[in-house]
Length: 160
Ligand code: GDP
Ligand code: MG
Image 1: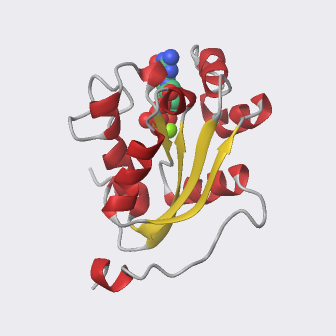
Image 2 (image 1 turned 60 degrees about the vertical axis):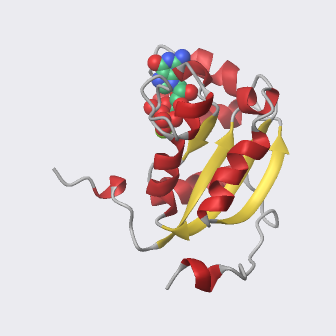
């Protein structure tokens, strides 16, 4: 079967990436940011943020009927998160690969979850699952004026 959202696209996209409270508490912020930075993607927004309950519920609304939903909301609101907007060609699917499988024990070594986490309920990072959700989530987590447009000097060395 053809799964278009899993295939790295040639389009410039945006992905909402968030370091969850366990990633912040465990001192993994620099490590996680550097994986996206070194890959070559462009950071357009970045903040440390105490997520209110209603925002966590809106962000994860598609999972609201799941039995783990209350635990998920208390996990995400249990401490500060790091919110990021990343832009690049194929960034949505690529970021999902860099992050690895939802269950860190099934995530490949070399991925963020595969290298840095053990349990699904403490899987250190979020990444948008489609370009549409990338846009939706960035609009949800960032206010007007919190995103920056800039030109990466390395752009010609990344994209032919
Ligand atoms: P993701 O896109 O890989 O983050 O996974 P999902 O969209 O399926 O789930 C969103 C988040 O909910 C996951 O990253 C986990 O933090 C959490 N989650 C998903 N499934 C479970 C579960 O079975 N138990 C618990 N405790 N948390 C879960
Ligand atoms: Mg998801």
